[in-house]
Length: 67
Image: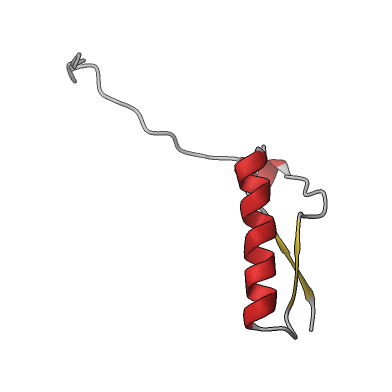
């Protein structure tokens, strides 16, 4: 069975890391043959992964409301 990396968000803090470790341990206890590890290999984004061709805009006549 392949190894599955369990990660948090891209800039992990303590709770994100602890959650990944806890989830990997829980899944291993529920399904021992499954191999989960906390952490991830270094992932690199490419420009085409985040590039957008359209962006949301507002027309000039739309009022700005302060709440």
